[in-house]
Amino acid sequence: MKNFSILTMALVALLLSCSTPKQEAETPEPLTDAQRLQWWDEAKFGLFIHWGVYAVPAGIYQGKEIEGIGEWILLRAKIPVAEYKNYSSQFNPVNYNPEGWVKMAKDAGMKYIVITAKHHDGFALYDSKVTDWDVVDATPYGKDLLLPLAEACKREGIKLGFYYSQAQDWVHPGGAASGGHWDEAQHGDMDEYLDNIAVPQVKEILENYGGLDILWWDTPRDMTPERAEKFLPIIAEYPNLITNNRLGGGIKGDTETPEQSIPATGFPDRRWEVCMTMNDTWGYKSYDDNWKSTAELILKLSEIVSKGGNFLLNVGPTAQGDIPEESILRLKQIGEWINKHGEAIYGTQANPFAYLPWGRATIKEQKLYLHVVQWPEDGILKLPLTNKVTKVHVLNDENTKLEFLAGSENLEIVVPQNAPDDILSVLVVEFEGNLDVQPVPSQGKQVKASSHDPDTEVANLVDGDPLNSWKAASGEQQAWIEIDLGEELRIGNMTVAEPWRIWNKKHQEYILQYWKGNNWVELAKGKTTGSGYSRDFEAVTAQKFKLIITGPNGEVPVLNEFVLNRAL
Image 1 (cartoon, rainbow, N blue to C red):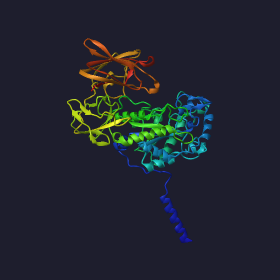
Image 2: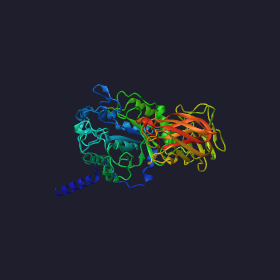
Image 3: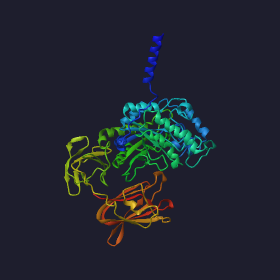
Image 4: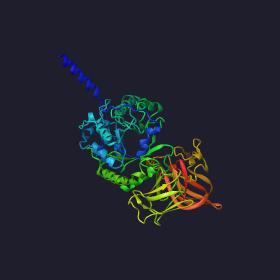
């Protein structure tokens, strides 16, 4: 018996030494910012997944189609909390296939996945210990949805992030709500909500899934600096975690997050990531058939990467755990294009040229990748490059060398009559030396305006930083901006950056003029998008340009950047 007891104790000790808590991660060695963000800088393309109880009503409440994005149906339809919680009995994703989802993302060329651990309806896709409003306790499915996805990502070498709505929570008392609460069940103290629900849940999702790569905050409604700081001690325990700029309280995080639109000038001094839907909604909505085409999505990927950003493209699974076939098809087709052209996407840097009328470019080491959107009808592609060029060819076709002629200002490439790819062709230019690129004509030049708000500067328009702005003085609905380039230059494009989201629909009317002789001559006019705008026009040679701009909806005009680009 004595020997048996000793043997038993030894076996127990051995088992205890080998066992580990569920998905417990080893504490990684802290990295420098460059090391920590290197994989993200190289990845360029990721999958966003919006999934939750809102997939049950799927955009319909009491027989009516509810306007707006599907995951906001609780707020948009002002559904009573108790009634909304009843939908959880129909959330039963028996078709959920995490391995298939990860493989789908990988085959599409995506390098990371971000999924909604908890959205604004407060519903958690895992077994939270601080609430019963989660997939394990409130649904017939009764199993953690995040753990098998984390395991599949690790097997396939895909980075993983969790989206977490830290402020807006329309079910737990005290959570914030855009526009205010509509049900007494929501009333409570926000600080108590943060202390008892949000902060503990962030701790849960960071502790239990094998080490997250990204924590994606959203909508910092009512998040003061003091409230945001409640999360900082937890984040500090994960020094290699990447976070975005939506925590609130003035905390910048690692990345900017333009949504549903591509910034006109990118963010030269910040990492950034465009998140976008394939149709109009993030969460599943049964009747939203306004799908972007595969070609449109590939062109968006090219534009985003050429401006130095990442693309986080969304799918919204059903309550049964199915990803819509329209999404699957588009991801498959994008993957086919990336499989041929990934060299021009992954690990590249932004377009070094201020403006290319025929498309975009990326760069990696001594190679320029020309993303040709408009294939030249005359068979000549012009590139403002004066470096010595050793070779030009179609990507993945090095044996077919293209003829080229180097000039004092432009490189001229003789291209085939037909574009090599039906959607987006890529040419490779191999060059020597440090890239010699002409500066943006308008950047840092003399600029003046009819007025400016005391909290802004006119010089902000030409400083190359789209995170600051110029704003006209109060009461001036129409204003003007004048730029002196210092010399006559041939200009063929105007680009402006604006501060609003695309859904704000704050279009500004403009008239662009140039100084000719003794008069201002109209060059172009139209409306901006409100989130950024670029306009090509028939090139003119001039030194002075004026933009007359009318503010949106009776407001004063606002611009973050005003850029004039050379014509080739």
